Image (tube, rainbow, N blue to C red):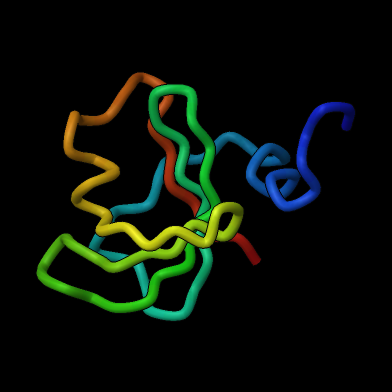
Length: 84
């Protein structure tokens, strides 16, 4: 695909399914998060609380808390899926 980073390609090729719940995230696994037009590949590093995780963006290598990424709510395009 033109203009798409190779690492984000898996985020884009997706069959339409429902987003998984934050309860189902597992440490060490990689997920694709889409929210408000941004697509991120996130690796879960640690569970910090019931619905909060420490995650690493695989493109920028920045570390976030999931709470930071969802602070302003979820957009109409919100999706969270595991990459295999």
